[in-house]
Length: 138
Image 1 (cartoon, rainbow, N blue to C red):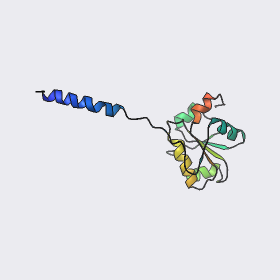
Image 2: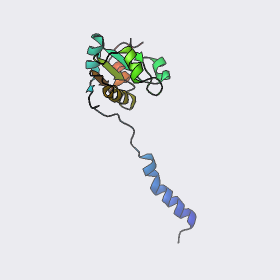
Image 3: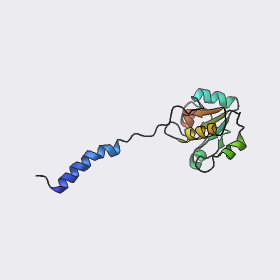
Image 4: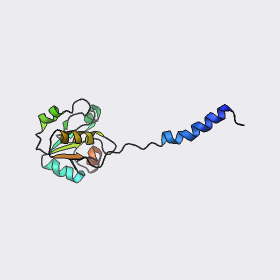
């Protein structure tokens, strides 16, 4: 018969794969009411003067951003009033963050739609893909 220590060890070994096999977060592919765009579409909107909203953390913002983007950090700054100071509800507004592992841009896009912004673009691929395409960063 096995001792108690062996029983605990077997139990822990059986549970360990469950603890380490949790999938990484992946952002939603779409946000109801917003238009999901890829990097080429984001660049087109950039060239047309759309307002880019960077909802990343302060540290990420300081590390680099899409030129001319407005920083409305999601957790502490991004509100209906704050967004309203930089964009009208009928303007093209592009929400971006750190790519598909970042939930911030989808959260911001959903909020903007809820607040009545009608031309919301969800740039799911975000700054990493923008940089990979060789587009400007400041």
